[in-house]
Structures are given as C-alpha cells and as structure tokens.
Length: 142
Image (cartoon, rainbow, N blue to C red; front, side, top):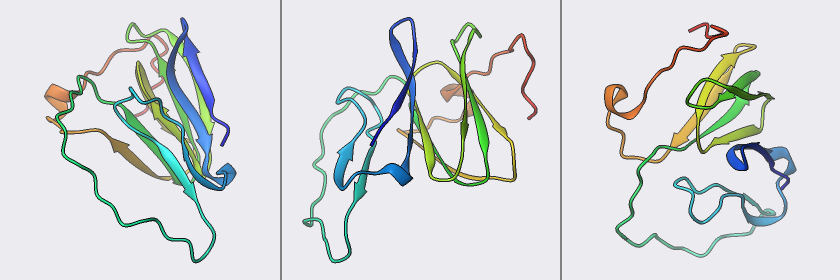
C-alpha cells in the first residue's frame, strides 16, 4: 500500500493511506518505534490467520498518537506544529485514513461524516491528555 508522508523539518508528522489500495497479505505501514502500530490485512475468502494472542510486556509511551479512518463523508485534516505553523492540509474520503504521529491536528467535516479514531492508551482525560492551541487563521469551527 502506498502511504503519503507529511514531513516538516525532516520529521514525519503524519501519513495518509487508502484502504482501497491495500495489497494482498499483511502490510505494516508504521515504524517499529511508533506508539501506534498500523497495518492492513487483505486476504481472499477462506483464508484464516493462525490463532494467537499478544504477550504482556512493559512498554513506555510518553505521547498519544492516533489514527482517523473515514467510513463515510469527507473531512479535511489540517496539520500544524505545536507552535501553530501550518504544515499541510489533506482531504480524506471514505476508505482513507491518517496516522497522526506528532504536532497539532484539526478535523473539519466537509460533509456529514462518520469517522473512527483509534489511539494508544491509557487515556487520562481531556485535562491531562491534550492541549488546545489558538491558531492565527482561526479556522476551527467547533
């Protein structure tokens, strides 16, 4: 699957991919050191994966990374540095997703939309787990 990296100062802030372009088999898009691991599976009817479970390991996560998948509708994701500098805006349609690794993100619903958000936990609540910033362009509508 092709992924499009969104880079600022040689750092990948996010990447975008389209589930409609999934390749056959298991395809991991994330880097081993990412806190959220993202992969796709595309198999033919009758295929089964071997039964398995994931072992318990101590893991340290000092920030939240998230994935937003568009099921229906259309959204724009705007990506900024934590200082508020706009890096890039990307329009996501059904089947597309974005993996947010660093920086600030804003989602604008261009149409009535259903999206799924997945992020690493545990979640400590809005007051502890996130910080809102004021943008110069004041583009936020929510």
